[in-house]
Length: 251
Image 1 (cartoon, rainbow, N blue to C red):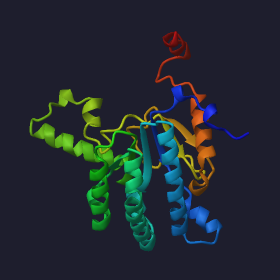
Image 2 (image 1 turned 90 degrees about the vertical axis):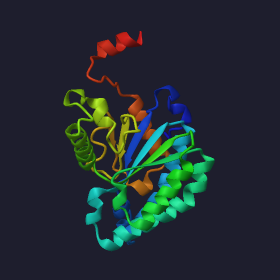
Image 3 (image 1 turned 90 degrees about the horizontal axis):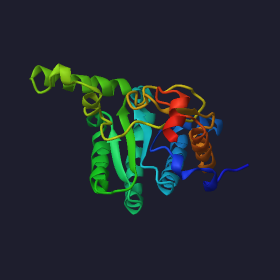
Image 4 (image 1 turned 45 degrees about the horizontal axis):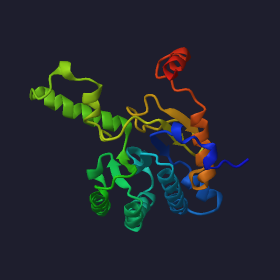
């Protein structure tokens, strides 16, 4: 039976949802089209899921858009993805403003092609004062790269006596991450059938609920999103505690 808004408890929604949008290429291949066709279709799903997240008042949504490993794909596909990103940013900036969405980007952004980087910066600046959902796109992003980058900055600060080694704690590490302005992930969704996190938000996923679906990203529509949220709401999040402790805290 199809799920609707009434099947989702507004009190138990995740604050931060992260999505690995996998399966665009396979979706296109099944239709005898090139992989880029799948990426174009995938953009439509991004729009739908962003709109639904805004409706549900999800504060943070993070999308794995382009990983540090994706540069290893064929050059024509990488070029097409970068062009699609520029086109999408330009097309969607007015919608981001209308929906009061603040765009955020995490990753080693300076290694992006100049046109992609400049377009991204314009949209980041334009939406910077929006107060609604923060939509983060992970670009040239890798979880290990993020931790390595943070470690190098902290090491330099220790060397220059800006930070004392004994003052390094989780908060200090977090404040040097690309994703420093994001809370921990509550729900991570991966489409496309693979059951791994693929170097995504390693620090922020520490206590995330993981949801895997065989549905390819271009087929991941509102019903699929509701199904993931419904599944999340049935889980008990203990953060290292026992069920009895959680029950006691509720009462």
